[in-house]
Image (cartoon, rainbow, N blue to C red; front, side, top):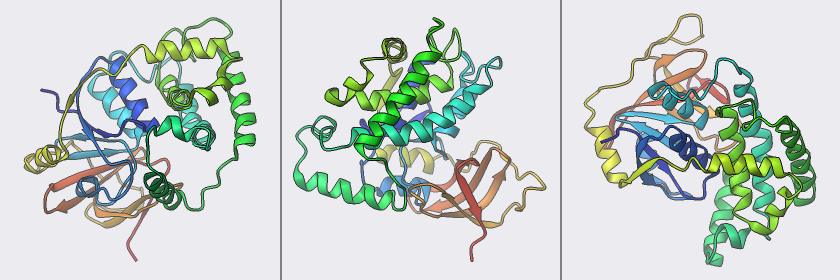
Length: 308
């Protein structure tokens, strides 16, 4: 039985990014469906307050943010390589896709014309609650309006179309990498709303590229309850992935710290520092149900602070 546990929900674009990576690597994984909005008591039991989706759990190690989750999956299943050594710009394109492209595609797709397709059959009460949840989650984050979003997406899509014009099957060459999966998540979400996905019609090479990525599927998921996942963490008995606090980075092992995203869903997650490098921060925390867990975050996009 696989020890990869993905906490996700069906309509989450970042979850689709990870599901496609798992499919490309032909991996088995356990699937825990989490609520689409707060409250998320089982998620908080594992993360201490981080609420973004998805999460990857391996025993009592909880990995947050798809930038880190993808690296962990690639370390455990290095072939085929998600970060081709011959194409280092994969990381740069992926960062652009996870930010600029994502925050253009998602507001454009969630305009009123897209909502019935994204949430078919949803009640007015559900949509109102979801709107309030997302407003609180993205407070202070400026979002483009549909007119500007359409223009900006057309510009992004034209750039991607030109990149594919040479005839290579994937964005940066003959094989896919992290850039492909990061870009694919936004196209996947846009295509959930067919009337809005007409924006892709002038870009046949991009559409064909997306179909190649989507064909990888989602691997071999096995359903799992959140209670069972929490029991896995509690039963790990202090067995964690190796980590250390590297010197010269401004914090010491065992220091109390908080970690928070800097763009949206900026909830503070408190814990004890047990791992720190230029790429990753790891905090230890205890929950009555999950026991002692290590919560991992990437350094890019997150801020560490000493509690005041």
